Length: 152
Image (cartoon, rainbow, N blue to C red; front, side, top):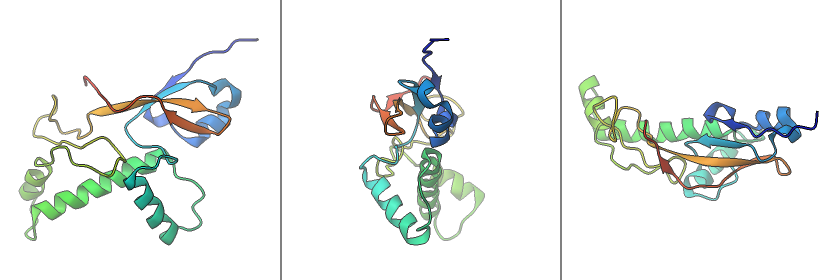
């Protein structure tokens, strides 16, 4: 038909399968996500790849959503550490609410977690996204912005 639509996808569409299935149609498509891309040279990604290589040498590629889960594990480990040896629900919540600008080596934007469901310090933890552009020649997503705070 000769049309060249531009797609804009969310976190769930930032997977290698999107580019594989869409092919040429995804050229120059844009996406938003709150994690680093596997090809980025940030400390957290380097460490994650090293650990994965040791325990999962058969793993062929890292899905960006794995990065979000990995960063969540890092944050949870920090919360448990802050909660102390006598772990209680209240202690865990208080420890989580103490996270302010917590860094995961660049895997996700700094994590700030708070007692409310909305606002700059809320229970969602991540408060920024980046815009990515599809590079179908390399079959990767390339960040075109830094972290941008969201209004949600």
